[in-house]
Image (tube, rainbow, N blue to C red; front, side, top):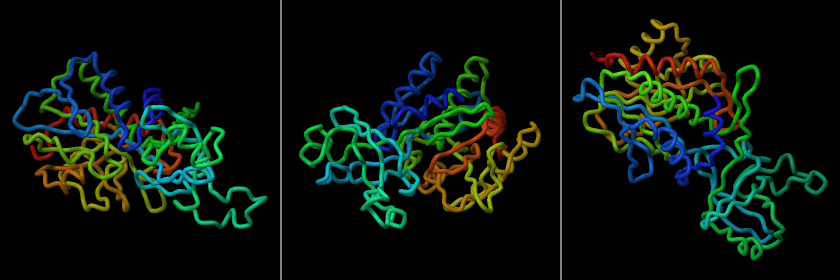
Length: 341
């Protein structure tokens, strides 16, 4: 839980993930792993297994939702362009950081232009969109010229304050649990494999991808020997969903279509055999690194599991029991025979 909290507090909107990739690299550096970065900036970790002719790959992503400066407005505020799929109302009132190309960071708040109810009669009804949403910078600026004098320009990255908190009742609530909760789980899993000197049945790759929120994080650098590809992401919670915050969610289908039936049944079987609480679910408006790999034409068996995350792509929350059951299923999965074996 503490590792996840550390991860969400590192700003990493898609397109600006160097710092968090470096953090993961350094945290795992003492384990003498085979690690390399691909040209897209993702981190690929390989643990050799008994069978080196057929490989597995697990992936989770460090990139998060964010924004980019679209326009420096004449009133000294900033207009934004979204990075990733969220709704403007989900970040209204949120504190943020603006990182300039020189590396200087300024703070601000994302607000409606028509925020003050004492001035704007339509403050509650005005559309939450890229026209009305703006950033109020925490500097003494009242014009475009004064903002540009700070070094803030179009194309600068804007990250959202995660407001991470671990409660006494076992919840962690924060932005960006999608998918830094899974990254934390894979890091702990890798550490456990190494510390226990476990020999895995198959050579296993762990891809810490960095472009999932924009659709192409895990669709390359997949070794030709890879047979099974498991995305570790998040389970979506809402009306009509079986996923909750206390179990591992196993995805049967998302907007890309069904996941591999044999692998899904294998995951369910392992959960039942090892007292792992799980739910099978369909995520109607969702895609993963595994589905991106399938679309890219890779001949793989693909699956998707994750902790149940409430209020996805907004101020998210999950419980330690969901993290425990997800990580336990992962532990049994990497030591199991392949689904078709």
